[in-house]
Image (cartoon, rainbow, N blue to C red; front, top):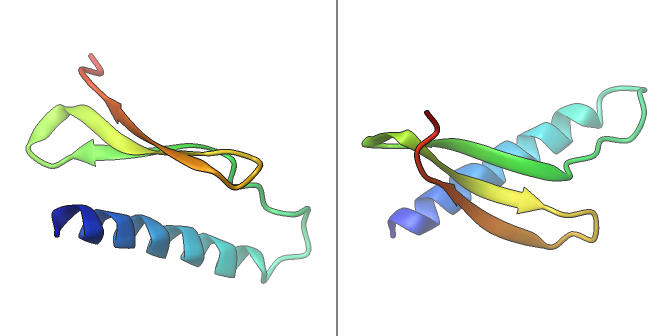
Length: 66
């Protein structure tokens, strides 16, 4: 359940970014890269995903960031 909520939030952010980019006349938007956020209750850790140019993705969990 918790993973589904986090995945839904990440997807919402991704779609919002795509929607906003369609309103500009600049170069095409590239979402390729690593996207992370703090893990609730674990202030020294981050979670997220890496999006590759071919459209595939991989989850990311980073331990201590200090």
